[in-house]
Length: 208
Image 1 (cartoon, rainbow, N blue to C red):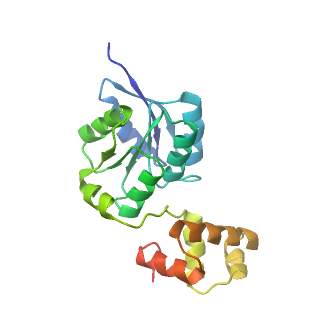
Image 2 (tube, rainbow, N blue to C red):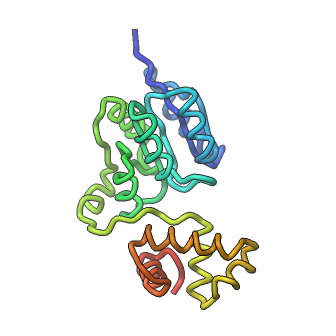
């Protein structure tokens, strides 16, 4: 009897999820038991269904795949985590691995590679897409990707906006702006607004 590997699939694009699900379930030993369209839903469904493997996109609303991976490692360590995404930037890869993801595969990979990646993660192996393996292991700088809101805040800061002006522009409180900036500094390993802007520009996160 074939052992079915149960999967939680999280991606904020329904068409993409449908395609990936079709690929995965073409294998007799893989079964997608739940789908999520944002990070918070992914957490709830992982807690509810306890899948063998969680297949997560990096950029999702509410919580990123990186954040879900870190939470999953802490709360549900028996669930393997495979990042399946279009982002091949080394910092994303490093951040995912630092968060405890077992694998990182690009959506450009052939279906057979995706299927094998799920099997390998289920077996406790670490998987890296061949296209990014060399860069992933040689990069020295590791940072957690910024959320969309954090990028908005930093972009306005780069344009010279004060905290008060940023809060008015984004309809949030000054305290919330300060909180976003604190998170940005921590993620980018900087201490000041200027350093954060310079690093974000060098990493291509915001326009010069």
